[in-house]
Image: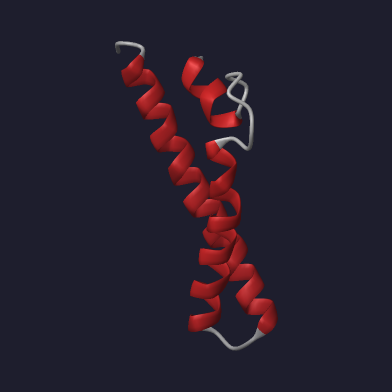
Length: 73
């Protein structure tokens, strides 16, 4: 539970939590990558949204594995 509190910023340290920096990075990476592959604006947005979900899902899966491993199994 401590790791989740650290990520979302509820650990009492104050300031912006480290985990929230991932959101604008994921959005920027997805938009730039999709825009470099397509010219149609609607297609760019659809592909970027799909990539946001893919990257976000992968990061959440890795977080879940790390939380399970940190609890000892």
